[in-house]
Length: 85
Image 1 (cartoon, helix red, strand yellow):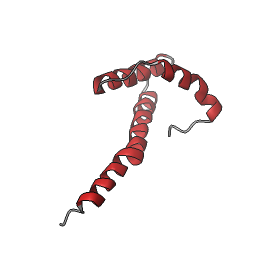
Image 2 (cartoon, rainbow, N blue to C red):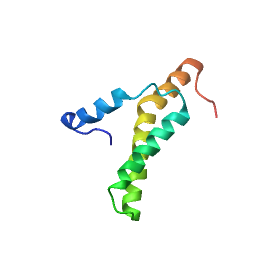
Image 3 (cartoon, helix red, strand yellow):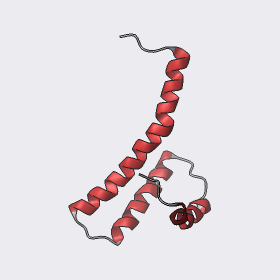
């Protein structure tokens, strides 16, 4: 999960703050892919490491979905009513 100790977040937050506005989904995908490549440059090219890289991103996507997308879907269901079926 993306919850590392606050003291370990400081250098990453400084770099993230320097990024320009991320305007498109493609821009976001480029940044995420580039970070994954950087991670892999210092690691052995083996299945377990590649798996760790992919699943780190997947776990972040799962957490984002849990915190934001699911909340939005629940609000829409409450506003518009549940699906009968």
